[in-house]
Length: 124
Image 1 (tube, rainbow, N blue to C red):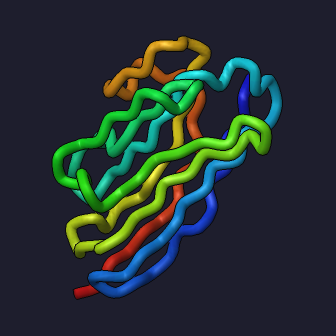
Image 2: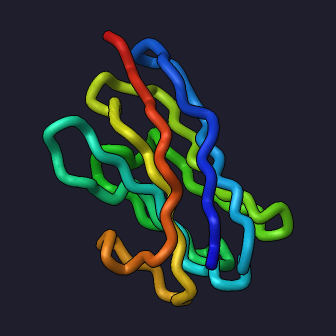
């Protein structure tokens, strides 16, 4: 089993930046494909960004391209989501997710391990 714990959320104003962190513990050798998802009130959970184990392959949903950056430090077992130029529509609970597969995916069902989520609120 892999345990994931997010940190770094909070309340910010539009245009501000936040960096989310996700610390993996347990059987971290199973945390290969990794992703950040988010869920806003009344909306379905959506993928925000994904990253391969090596970090060489990344994916971003169109709404965050150019503003968010996903990265990982496999030595520290920590994964990051740098969020710049935040907008009110970025307000959501953000979840980190991981799976033992090497191939990254954009569907929630493709990830076996999930953090509890952390709130990000962007005020206008």
